[in-house]
Length: 207
Image (cartoon, rainbow, N blue to C red; front, side, top):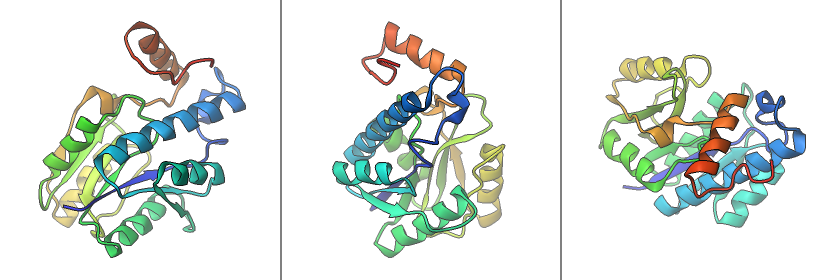
């Protein structure tokens, strides 16, 4: 089954502003770039069809250098319309299924992505919640489906309701490496502590 991974990126420079108490602008840029490179590498190990949706020229350059495609975000209204458009384009290009993968999951791995696809099955969908089980950290869906993306406040519950509305069976996939994202200063502190103690990664090195 053809799978296209779609990675939305707001901006390497302007993203993660909630980390401003612990990281300055240049440091946030570096962290965002490192996250994107890791996400592209992980998605690329799963599928040769990876698309970064963004208006950020630097993010597009990183995507193109990795062998992924980049899609300039032309829609108004933010993330959800952009993902809707990208899903339709992926379907037109032959994708049977799409995998929405935000670029701020430092410990996401290939097994996580395979689990999402496996749980989604042939006609259903799979969702990975964040640690509080309020937000959505990953989605796997049929490409070009009438499903409407609901990223934002309480998106985990909104996406489940949307799936029910359009007749998709939504399986919840709970994996620690999918649940851990970095939005707030305490998340960054946890990431730094994990890297110092037990992880062979360098996202926080020098920051």
